[in-house]
Length: 376
Image (tube, rainbow, N blue to C red; front, side, top):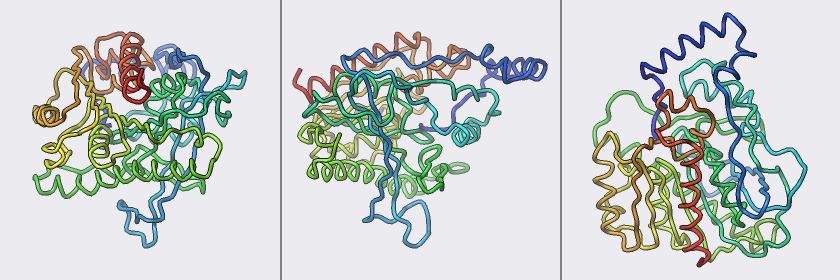
């Protein structure tokens, strides 16, 4: 996600003051779910149930850019969503390991943890470690990239929508760009991609260029790893159709998607969700993206340079379409507005009702990938 969530509007401050007063009077464990109700994600509407698996992959060919530890190889936590058979198994919670995630989110949001601790009660519709549906023999792979302070699962509703229609979706925590990355050995990596104060142009590119290269290398490594697993005929991956690969991302993940699509000929179609275009290198802007590109975003950005660069990129891309949606805000293009009506009250989400917006975005995303990856 692009920057620290701006929850400091006057309206939200008033809500927090009133909430804190009532909470301390009545006890936050019981009152918070009433004051700030949270919703489960919408039920996927495709023909399949959804399975999910979580992996840790190490790229032995890359030193970790974010650390100075000798021999520290790039590690990422990767999650896949895919079609499976209907089951009575309990679905995976939205926040697996909430005791570790909630403090990280509290730090990211700059808010007391008790205000959103019941986020741990939100469920997905994905069954952990379920087998791939036996009818799925060959299906497109779609790779997702989150933004700064984002999470690999921040667009789960869209992942489940695609998986329920037969796609395999892959998303990773971009280590040190994500709010938190939890590794199998019990270690963790927290967000390190911020900076203090204003940056000169030289400082901006000195920071963002190698960072963006690291993110794009993550995408290439993910596709490389799946390719190896397909060739090894591993369960789940054997069904991935590597001749039809889609890419999409939110915010900085949108920039990552653009650069990855411009450099990796294996990527056949790309969606950018309210992308942060400013860090996309000028050379990429001037070259454009040759494969189909769809941009979906809010009507305008505070920094007009973002859409000025987008316009140049689109003009240089032969197969492109842009959809700007009045009434939306940056986090509307993730799961955020689906959690609670409070997201609109605080200004974190726009004015379009959450489920209506989610259905609209799902339709646009599924239709685009169906057309360019499935020929439908």
